[in-house]
Length: 483
Image (cartoon, rainbow, N blue to C red; front, side, top):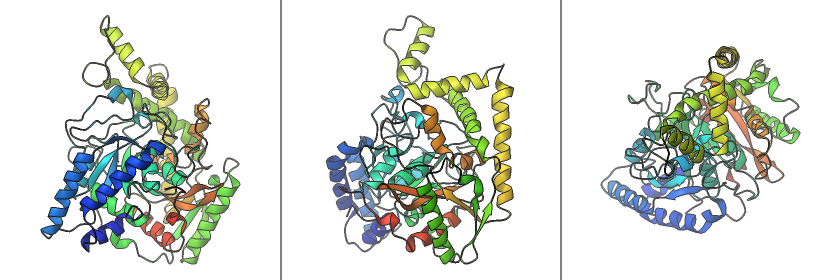
């Protein structure tokens, strides 16, 4: 049962081959057996899962149907879940039980999805390796000595190890796509505003976006269908009709114009990954796509711009965690100032403190124009590059990451080296574009992803291209040894 995709589960439930309750019990037992190796979950919700599974079976017995009705999933632990710990991977929120469900959680629950638990993550989604979590690092099921990527590494590791078919995740600078690449999954960051951020604990509000992590593009289409849509509670939510993502999966790629930016193939890219990307291009050409070289001249400025804007927004968003209203509070504070300082100093980990300090510096009176304002101008140039490129091509293709997953701890002493691993993913967040990573091969036994980018609200096109590619390749079907 654990090898089934979300689509296969939907068909099995519809054909009454098994019940949601049976499937849920199998997966909960599998998590109990295998997750101690991975550390991919922070909280398990066995009672809730069995309750939801029984309810889903009852709904099916009454004639209801739906691809997510009775399907087991998990949520990244920054989506608020009523009455259940929502920690954001931090000591600061270790004791926080959300009083309401995030819109994404509520929508998927209404569709009948079964929540198995909350997955591990980099603290407040700050990281590219899932090593900054208060609950310990997550291991990559393809090699337990390597990172699974971040910040959605818990969701990625759990799905890759076949502990469940799909999970929710979030992407601020590549935190869905990079873990997908590192663990041989398909991961989609939707257009900014396509998925509600209400009840999703913020890191950088103008960059954060929720999306699906699964084994196939078909499964991502199913999960995104349940997540997407306008939400009046979120002022950045876009009131745009949600298409049927599954309906366009089998559209022909004949005549599809694919752009490959020359800037992607610089000295920083592992040549073995470059070869796999070129192989992916050839595969898509066989399916009728037309490929041409394009240029994104301002890509080189994206990382410095991102690491000014994101920490600036983080320093503002995380100011609410002060030891007064909710979350961690230090013992026996001497006065209010001591309460603030010690609660934040003890509650936040090193990476979060680093980014708060960088952000506060960039927003300070003497440096706002020199850093933050300049970074926002670069952000506009990055967007303009994409807008110009999309007048020539339908999608943009390239590597998801410059290197395969590194060893646990390898970049801990050099945070900038870890930041540079986001070079290909960050631009989509700065511009608000949809992006997808799909499996493209292996280097030294570790998975490699190819990234696709499309114009605004063209998630269906990305899923279509990925699905057609997966019908003609088998990379996405490979399973890590021992799982």
